[in-house]
Image 1 (cartoon, helix red, strand yellow):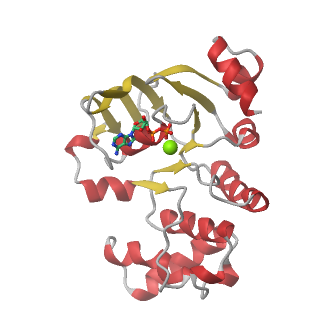
Image 2 (image 1 turned 120 degrees about the vertical axis):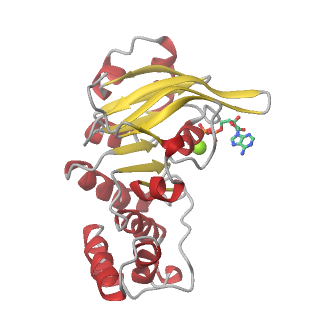
Image 3 (image 1 turned 90 degrees about the vertical axis):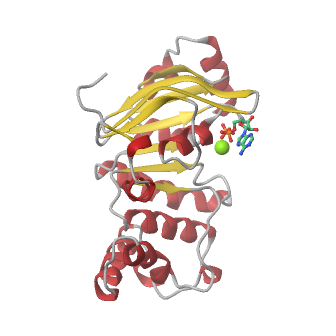
Amino acid sequence: MSQNPLLRVENVRKSYGEEEVLRDVSFDIDRQDVEVIIGPSGSGKSTLLRCVNRLTEFQGGDVLLDGQSVLAMDVNDLRRRVGMVFQDINLFAHLTARENVTLGPRRVLGMDREEANATADRHLAEVGLSDQAESYPAELSGGQKQRVGIARALAMDPEILLFDEPTSALDPELVGEVLEVMRDLAEGGMTMLVVTHEMGFARRAATSLMFLDGGYIVERGPPEQLFERPERDRTAEFLRRLT
Ligand code: ADP
Ligand code: MG
């Protein structure tokens, strides 16, 4: 436990009806940390991310962002501070890449068109899409669309970015370009919470790896520890199947 983590998840419990999805989940994320979350399908990875920015409500525990409970925050303010990139690439089809990225800064941050365009162009450059600013989603590959999604999240100047299987819907040959952008962000000091099964990314970019199963964190530690000397048989078995 660090003194002043950026994110503290504290004894979070979450059920859907009778089904307990998160039983007692606690962890801290420090600034500039990259936490990779793995676990079987249905283990609650997406639900955990959704508790952090309150896309879903939870029944017990608390989530603190920079020391403040997300339950006490204005939800729009929370979602500006906690960016999210989803598996499904949900860009507006009738807007260009640049327009998709400027939407949030204009509506939520109140930027004028000129400032929002400059912000969008800066973040499109960051994800390697300067030359696609005028393209519509239908003209972009899946990997390019997902990179626009990342630029859109960055344009809100978030304190932490959540990624929910950002490459799972992509054709294999397009996965690398998205992971490369994510690695660049990690190296640039972005704080990230990433659900992914891309273990190459986890090895190279994660400061910590978390194995979630049955509503609990089964094991958590530096990636080399989980890969090379996992303490739990379940972790070893899961990673063996994944790699
Ligand atoms: P993961 O992302 O690890 O695959 P999820 O967090 O999506 O897991 O789901 C965890 C469990 O919660 C699953 O059993 C799933 O069926 C259930 N669940 C998820 N979302 C809902 C929902 N909106 N309503 C009811 N059950 C849900
Ligand atoms: Mg999921």
